[in-house]
Length: 221
Image (cartoon, one colour):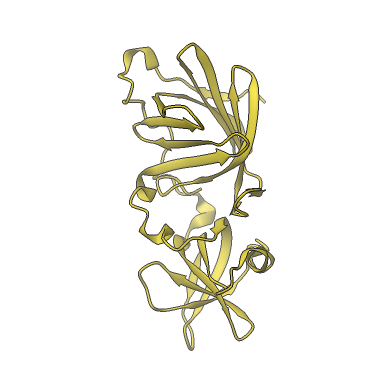
């Protein structure tokens, strides 16, 4: 299948003014009636409970999407049994605290401050890997690459859609050809244990470094 390619005239743009190629407002028909939510997962009385950020109410998790969230949470839970979760689902009213019909899992991680992340809503994509350490943050202003021992590099980018939810971002900077390849595949961070919904590969002049990624608040399909 021919890849549908979206081009940005990066040569005409200032360094920090890359066009936002992701459409954060698009909503799949399968998402009707659902919402993306972040909050805390905990276990009580043999049930997994989800408490949205900034709320006191908790919802019993019903894994309608077959995400295996129970097994994933059990493998990550800390001594207090509480985790940060980024999910998509549908709140169902009922007796007691109600129920969350969970359809999609974006990430689960040990974190005490993820609910307070001021940049999440502006973030389109984040990907990171280890050995050596690297991370990429994508927003409407461009792509920022951070690598161990090097200054952050902010660049515009070109997006190429590859079908089946796969895509890549590419740029030329400092005589380097930089690409980030992303695919919708469950990925476990081998350093933190965080579980994310996408696998990622950072390629710089043909050298490949692997990691995991997730969509930020500006894109949630």
